Image (cartoon, rainbow, N blue to C red; front, side):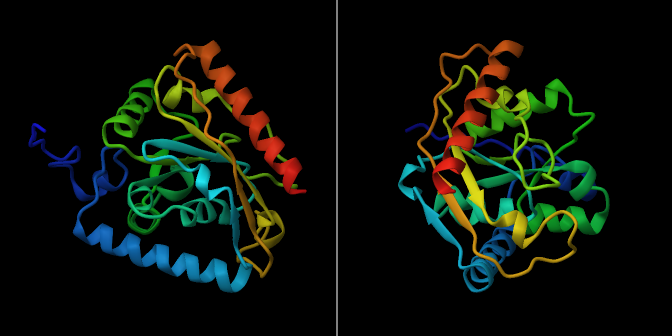
Length: 238
């Protein structure tokens, strides 16, 4: 093996800019904080929500992308809690920049506790998507992504947006479809805090898009196939 010493992707960035950077890399402090946060989240899910996961054997080695239905702030916590080992340490939730990265306090929480990377819903540029795709592959990361783009306001699942395809079309990175049941009842968008309620996560078999074109038509194909698989998992869980 040939070792190559490379500077950190976020080397030299000012502190505030670093928090919002797609190139942000984990330092010792963030690793410790994120590890403590994962333990706290797992305890919360076990005690308050009797969290149950099926299909964990379907999770591949990184890099991969996890996608699921989206109705609650619990969703990203549940998917992250299903990961262990290197996958957990290298997982990044792709979070709405206009929600989680608008102030110093929320940016600190999103970056160091959630290990989130920002996606600006109305102004993410092609170059930024390419940076995220490059990091996913080269750094062997796990992305947690909700292709509906926003939380459901009635618990029903909406259409998947094609942006998901930008990360995986034409690459060997698999997409793992998941379906989460119970999150809307436990913590809908209309509530400030969660309430007790059973949560079940079903993890499906990985999907490959290595032969899918890296263009708009390919992105639409990726989104449609992933949406169909997540809906199928929801039907089985019902």
